[in-house]
Length: 436
Ligand code: AMP
Ligand code: ZN
Image (cartoon, rainbow, N blue to C red; front, side):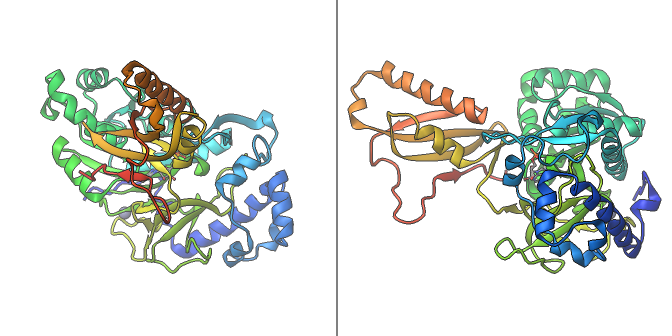
């Protein structure tokens, strides 16, 4: 096994020293948090008014959780801890829910974040000899720029193409002998299915590895894709609230993801009680971001479910490993990389007068891409036999939905009573995207 490090000292720091470093950084972070209107109020209420109130890491539990809605309430500057002059970049979550959330970074914050990405890149065995095609979207989403700067720091040759346009992607891979991809599992699957159309097969390419993330996927999906392409695939996890990708990355052993614990404090909690669970038990992942000062986030509830491996990894890294994401505590769907809540769809449907009370959201996967169908009941009187009118209604519903969730859906119109009715809790989402 070829084990390489970007920063061996910090990546293999003894757990005891890692905890000490976390404590130092946490106390520094409290100082920044106190400068924000949001935490100033919230921490005071919890009896914390200065870094001295945190004596050891156990004291973390005195700090209340932060949730996504807090970010919305604090929009735009309630969580900003520095002057705007010090802010050099903003990002946002790929979520499309009405009120936006914003993440601020200073130059130092970006520098520290980039370093974590460099570690992940090197941990997978990539280096300056690699040609890296970054197929995650650039822009407000953190996936594009995050890995971009990490890869430049390590010295890879970066092709900053972003997502979409399969033909061009394949052409670039061939022309520049791309060896590493950063991509979502759904797009990697899709590309494979379209290769025959462009008369290209994986054997014509120089691909060696892919960093795959932004969406949940199973071990079977990884194995299948590795086989289809003949490459090594590494799981990469992150979220914009914790800077973006690079929170946790798989090493050469591909046995779940090392969390960079000098950058983040990870806790696994029981989502119902908020109690911290022992290592090995599955629960909601909570992170404290120790390396971003422009916008501190303490004990942020991700709503992602996972567990921590108690035993160390043979690679020598001491950052504990987090399992792949096994689910969510909420009903958020990730459709081709875009976060969508069923409530957003409901809100739009219910604003359209022709739409009745019942609807169903149907997810399938075709040619590797997620397809969204929305089945709605409409009033019987609308079924007049005039097909063009029904088509116009479908187009209207799709347009309104697309304006909110940014993706296209196939609309099906049904007579009242045609869709399953619910007496108890409605089950409106039918997810048939098989895991392959
Ligand atoms: P965003 O803030 O838009 O980057 O979305 C972050 C969310 O994407 C996370 O909270 C996860 O739900 C999901 N996500 C990111 N990376 C992965 C991954 N490797 N496996 C599963 N889910 C992921
Ligand atoms: Zn390892």
